[in-house]
Length: 261
Image 1: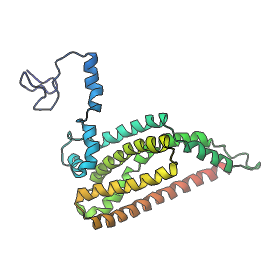
Image 2: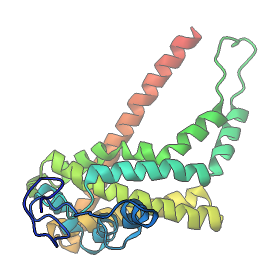
Image 3: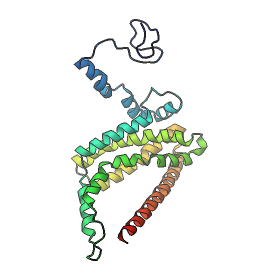
Image 4: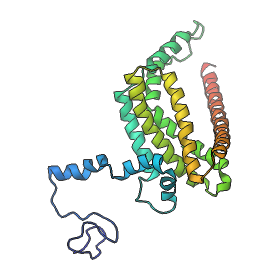
């Protein structure tokens, strides 16, 4: 018979096409078949998602290098991994909102008391703004991936990987950290009541340890070399990060000044 995807000749009892790798499906759709095809694979411990997620802890070098070396089907593709995480995070914060939103916005509103003479100053709904910001917090974090990539590229430039390959590396690492952060928030913040500040500090150390571990395995670094390059990586990242924050703050200040003139 012929493969229904690439039309190549295959054995009649084949389960997968030996040419394109497509699964051979001869049965009609049913309730059980729909579950198996569209929902079951995601919860299967042998699918690409779980292989990628746990592989980044067990053997990060293999996962990080697979995509850039051409093994595109072995693990979840890096940019699809980002999209999956961003989608899950958006729905996650709808069901598990952070109480810090109300605390922060209320404190800001109390501190912001425009004078009677500043009647033209636009009123800002900080509660609504912070709810929107924190709802998409993890999505905004993913926008920093190019910054992480530039930092790791500069740090490990002599190792031979270009910026776009570091973009792949950090897409995997930051998405994996994102999934972990969702789990930790439910356990530590929503269930145990730990403050968001403590949670953020713990996650920051987890971010450092996981990133250094991954690059240590990727480049076969010694412990001392991992620590020194890790410090360099963190310094470079925060220089870029605070530089961007300063530019954005200056831009907001200019826009604000223009609105009250």
